[in-house]
Length: 236
View 1: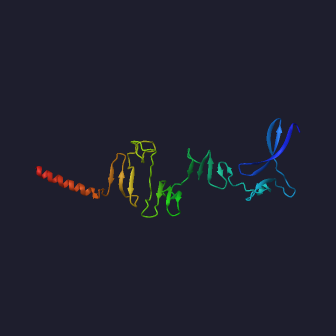
View 2: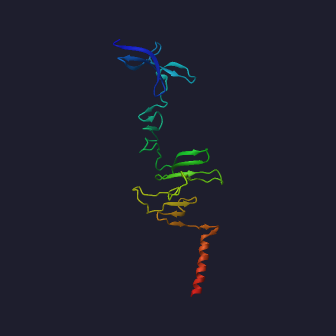
View 3: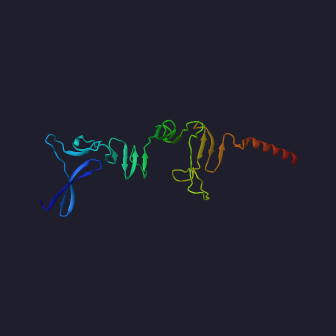
C-alpha cells in the first residue's frame, strides 16, 4: 500500500464536542489521522459518533446533529449577538480597543447594560438619558438601614501616603484640566437642582447650610459677626 500502514482506530473530539472516529495511518514513519465516515444503505447521509445524556455512544446521521451550540462563525456565536475575538468578549458588537468584556449600549435610549442583585434591589449600570449617552450607576438599598450605593476603597497596607483612597479625576477628552464646569454635583431627587458643587479649583458651592457639631454654620457665622460688631463699637 505504497508504504502506508493502517493501524487501530481512535476516537477524537473536535471543537464542537462531536466525537470523530479516526484511523491512524503511518506513512514513512509519519503519523496522520484519517476520519472514518461510514454510510449505511438505508441512509444517504454520512454517519458520526454521538454521545447521549446517559453517556451511550452511537452512530447518527450528521444532518441530525445540532452544531449550533458553542459554534463560532466569523467571531460570533451562532444565533446570538455575542462576539469572541482574541480572548475578548463583546455583547452587541465586537469588543472595542483592548476591553476584555465590552457591552454595546445605544445612544438616545434609556437602557440598563447589566444588573447584579436579588431581583428587587441591587446594582445597575447603563445609559441614563434618551438624548445622547450619560453613563449612569444606580444602587438601590432595601430599606432605611441600607445605603443606596457604597464606594469602598481598600488599601493594600497601612503605610503613610499622600494618595487619597478614592479619587474623582475629572479631565477633558484632550487629557487636560477641566476648568469650564464643576466636577462633582450632589442633588436630592432632581438632576437640575444642585445642593453641593465642587470645581477643579477646590471651590465648594453649597445652597443649604453646613452643620458642625450639631450647630448651623450660618448660625456660627452670625454669632461671630455679632461679636465682631461689639468689638468694633468698643474700639470706636
